[in-house]
Amino acid sequence: MRLLETRALKSFYGDFQALYGIDTFLDQSETVAIIGANGAGKSTYLKSIAGLIRNEPDSVVFDGSPIGAMSAASVMKLGIALVPEGRRLFPSLSVEENLLIGRYGRQASGPWSLEEIYRLFPILRERRNAASTTLSGGQQQMAAIGRALISNPRVLLCDEISLGLAPIVIRDIYAALPRIKEAGTSLIIVEQDIVQALQVADRVYCFQEGRLSLSGRPDELSRDQIHNAYFGS
Amino acid sequence: MAEWINTIIQGILLGGLYALFAAGLSLIFGIMRLVNLAHGDLIVLAAFAILAIAAWLGLDPFLATLFAIPVMFAVGFGLQHVLLNRTLGRDLLPPLLVTFGLSIIIQNGLMEAFSADSQLLRSGEIGTASISLGGGVAFGVLPLITFLSAIAVIMALNLLFYRTELGRAFRATSDDLEIAQVMGIDHKRIFAMAMGIAMIVVTIAALYLGMRANFDPTIGPARLIYAFEAVIIGGLGSLWGTLIGGMIIGLAQTIGAAVNPEWQILAGHVAFLIVLVLRPRGLFPRAFD
Image 1 (spheres, rainbow over the protein chains, first blue to last red):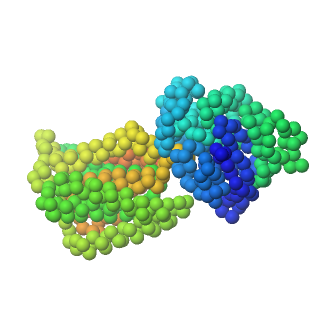
Image 2: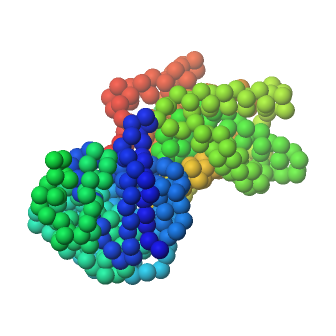
Image 3: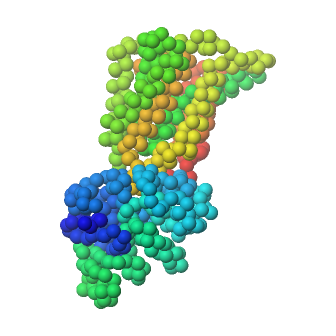
């Protein structure tokens, strides 16, 4: 049984349809990258899984159960955590409070404790009492990942975690992903940075204007195939 | 000279009562951006609840308040859960209309149940007791207890906000409702908890309102205005700012009354307008909003 599936996922913002029947799956301990240009529907796809956009119940299936119509809070309690685009740390909470709030709805046992997150991102320990607004972009991204990890999710959804960061910072952030995977968490990474995405992914889905335009293993896909799927032929 | 010192002390202590009126309003607005036009009427409702419990069980108002607190918490939780949560969204108008309607319902319901007669919670000796500082300077024990209660309530709310998991959830929900839900926070339950806690504060405010002055079912809207002014002077979201806001209104009113008794209420509103002109976001606004 697949860990997570989307079946003919159609998502709407009011009357506007953003996704047109997306079929994807994620297996245990797998990393899947979702690539595509701006407006392709990548973030909508993640929001639909996370419960921020409600859909038909069986359009998203987690561990065999339909979750497409569940609220974001209910989805999180099942073990699906989201690292949102733009980090979106809580400005009135300190760095440590931002991390701790991540397990408000789910206090599952697992490899990720506050201590382990500080071990993964040591700079957060140094800045633990600082206001989250005083962190650099990279540090904020680390805190956003830590906040999602502390609930020991079974699936981690990462939305544009390289957005607006310097290359050296992106490298540090991406260096943490294999450790997260080794700890048993499956990942879905939405990225515009194709190179980074292909380096960490076991499989890739490419979206174009709300439709799935390509899927496969990174080593099986040619540059031209990706280019055509990304921009349209 | 002693007269002016007395006036200033009375004004500061009166600010404690206004801060109690305002703290619940500030809490609700801070967390869910709900402008509760029925807040003043809920204070009056709580005062009548204390009155009824005191009469029914033959209790002192302070003891009756202990019984009224869980009742009002349940009223607040239920009100938010059943009614007000349905009104919250991007449009600010529905909660305004619904709480305005609630205000009218509470006033008329109380009128039906208790008549339009003025009521007073019996405060006994404490109501007239005073402490003399010599030289003609003195202040009442009840106003002092009111002020100390306001400080205690604000300290307790700060502890709740900054030292507990529920407080973290309150602040996170206030910061970013969507991402709070992604953290597994059931925002509707959080809102109901916040309203329940605000009603606890309202009940404490009602105790002192009812012991210090006559009240009847129609006085709620005026308490709402004082509460609004204290919240806005202090800066939205700042509980200590709310206390300062209450003190400024209290001081303005007592000084205004000392100059001319007809100026008491007007002086409070003028002080509010002056602060609004000089500091539109209040004296202690949140850094982010």
